[in-house]
Length: 412
Image 1 (cartoon, rainbow, N blue to C red):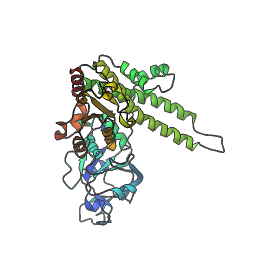
Image 2 (cartoon, rainbow, N blue to C red):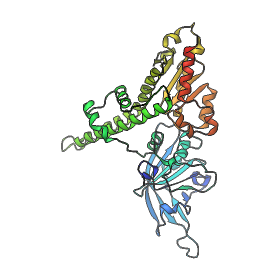
Image 3 (cartoon, rainbow, N blue to C red):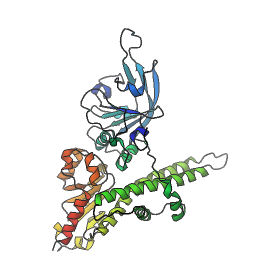
Image 4 (cartoon, rainbow, N blue to C red):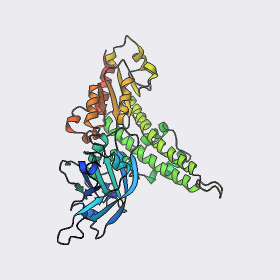
């Protein structure tokens, strides 16, 4: 097991497209997946029927949160009482909220965790989240009926970076990243509390030297985001541990303050979600300034809409004599899902809009719709490889976007 790779979190994975009999209760009541010989190399070959604790997750692009249920898979040899025949192992699965939502063609991944428990992920067919999981595990051939299996998860493809951490956390795998070398300095600087996102973004940038945003905006933005994420998780881990050490109990009779604990847990999750989006905007703001680009952040346009960035200024946007072709609008969303459509109504004067995201492998269905709605997707160049070759010909990187804005700014 190598730290920083998928092997740290999985001993092996198997993936396939669900068949009709595996997903449709009207076609079959078997509730089984056929195990393959290669799966058994990391699953094992129990001599008796073995029930394995399993977390089931169902993912779509539409639902804000996944459907999650804890249950089990039972691995057994269906020919145990037929000694004249070779073993045939199957996984029995119970009825869960996840199995009730599964459909033919959905992506199924069965992953074995280091503690021996299993993770079953089912992602809606054709969805972005399905494509992201395929990219995460390097799944390239799911056309055949059986499972595709990976038990060696320490290649360069399996290295966990900024993009893959987001996908892993979406399937309930928390990736711990930290750099203790900065912890004491952060505790002293921020007095043992979380600073504002703008302050923390500036601090994260200050810890990285010799980065020139004028030369390579794509590389610099991802370096800033990666560093802030690591520093934030380092500080967060310390402050959470400190808070947990004080407990959530009231008096002896009242017992643990469950509401207090749940409120604290929710605040941690919400802070993570909000912080990433604001950090991305903070770093972009400085990047634009360093590149000499004029902009206005969260300017108010029609119907009190507030696009993330208007170029070159809000005064130019509201000036009817200013050429609309020299205006640019950029929406910023760390992840899109279906929320990208919000950008379409945020600046009526600008026909062709831009949206910058850090989301990997958005489905072709959604990028085709973006193109049809005159919305150009912008991503750091390093994330382009998570998209199909056809999609990559259309994607714009950050350097190209800043060049476009500068050209419009300099037009006379």
